[in-house]
Image 1 (cartoon, rainbow, N blue to C red):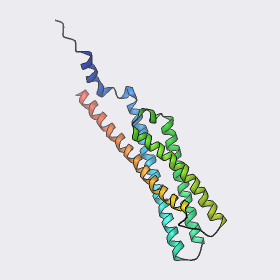
Image 2: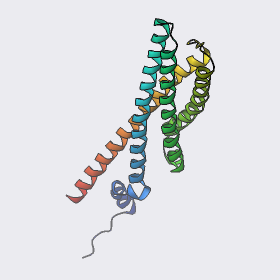
Image 3: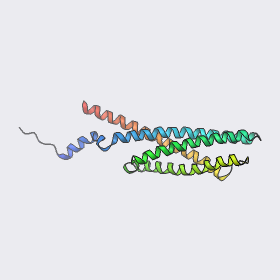
Image 4: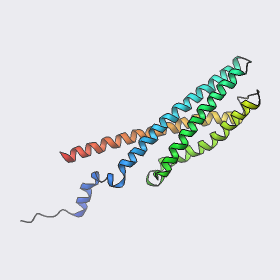
Length: 185
């Protein structure tokens, strides 16, 4: 006795939960995990840079000595350069993997905003180091210093966005494991 063949649409709908790997979903989760780890690192380094910046302000207003002021300023600049390198590597890899073409608009926005921040902070950090080496007159209210402070806060937010992608990747892995477990049962 011939059994009725299921409609092609029904077969496709039944197979959809198990076709994620065919579209590179597993690789995409690895990329999101990578973005999340880089986001955690960028956020932590930016927070350290903000702490050095705050210490520099306190030291600047509490004493007339310049050595501590320059010391904290250079520490802040070094940590900022570390954050810039981490951001540059992370987003270069994301672009090379084509994440901007295959993912949603918020991922594209994250990449673009990070690249803009890299450009802004590179200019400001270079200016800050040059200013500290060339003169003792550091102005904490200089427009570039204020832009630098704002960029650090925004960059911390961008790093938190990377943590969001890490959370999404973990959720996707859990959902896929549940689907595979139900399929085996």
